Image: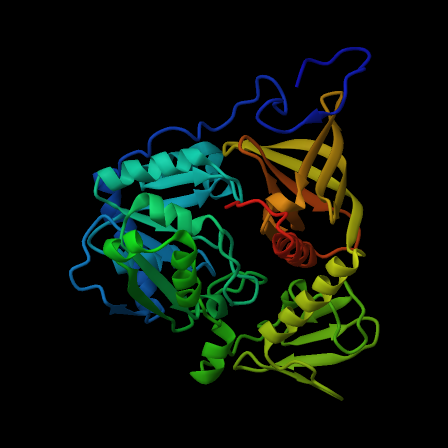
Length: 441
C-alpha cells in the first residue's frame, strides 16, 4: 500500500499482484529455481523417518513399480505430517522434491525455511494458479528427480479423499512423466487433523504406477483426471473398522466436533462438543460414544451415523441445499494475519469477513488505509482451513493470492470453518455445472 496520509480518499486497496498489501513488506520469492538437495541432509532425512516408520510398523506395498525410474510424478494423499516420512521410506534410496504450502516453512525465526529449502521443498500458496510452479517442476524433471505432490493441498478432515484440483490433469499432460500414487491407510487414525499427535497406530501404504508416459500421450487431461480420481479413493475409518485396528486412547473423540459441527438429531449447527471418548450436542443433549474401532454409537436413542465420514457427507448435502437455494451466507468480524514471507506473520487486526454465493470478501484497515480482498466463488474449488491454529489456538480460513496468504480467524461461535470449506466446494461445483466456474488448481 501507499504510505499513510492524514486523509485517505482513495478507494479500498485490493490484495493482489497489482496493489501490494504494504510497500516494503518482504515477500518470499516464489520464482526461484528449487535448491538442490544438500547431500549431507539426505541421511538426516532417512534417520528422522525410518525409526518412526518402524515404530508404526508401516508396510509399503509396491504395485507396477518394476522398471519405474526417475524422474516421475509421485501423487500422495494427505492425512498428517507422518505422510512425508512414509514418502521418504517409499522413495529410498532416492530423494524427492516436495511441493509445500508456505506456512509449512514457518518456524524458528526463519531457520525452518532455510532447512526445508535444502531438503528439496518448493513453496506454494494454496489453491492459486501459479504458472511458476510448472517451470520449477520442469527443472526438477531435467535433474531427473522425483516430484512429490500432495494434490489435496491440505490434511483430510475425516480420513477420506478430498477434491483434487481440476488442473491436475493438465499438469500431468505438460510434465509428461510417469504418474505414481502413494496412498496411505491409517495415518488419519494415528493423527487426526482435529486432534493431532502420534498414537503409534500400525499403518500401511500402497505405491502404484497408474500412468505411463505412453498412456499420457494418448489421453486428454479429462481422461487423466478420471484415472487419478479413481486411484485416489481412501477411507481411513472404514480401513480401521475392517481391519479391527484398536484405538485405546481415552481422548480419541476430542476435537471431533470440529468436523461434525451439526447435530443430526435436532439439526442445530455449531453446538456440538467433544471430550474423552464422547461427542454430544449442547442443545438437545444427544450423546455418542466413539468405540475403539472408530465407530459411533448413541448412548440413548438413534445413532443416526455410526461411520464418521457418513455424518460429514450428510453435512455436505445440507450445505449443498443451502447453496442451491441461495441461502448460504457467513458475515462475521474476524482477526486477520498475513504471511507474505515465512519468517513471521504480519498482524492486520480486525476485518469484516463475508462468504456467500459471490465468494469471499474481506474488508479491513491496515497501516491507516482501507483494504479489501475479493475472491469469486468461481475461482476457488476448495480452501485450506485450520483447527486451533498455532499459538492462537483458534480456527481459521486460509485465503491466498499469488503474493499474500491471509489467515482469517472468525470471531464468535456462529460459524464453522468446516462448513465454510464444504460451501466453497459445493458453490464451485454448482457454478461448474452451469458453465460459470474457472479452471483452477
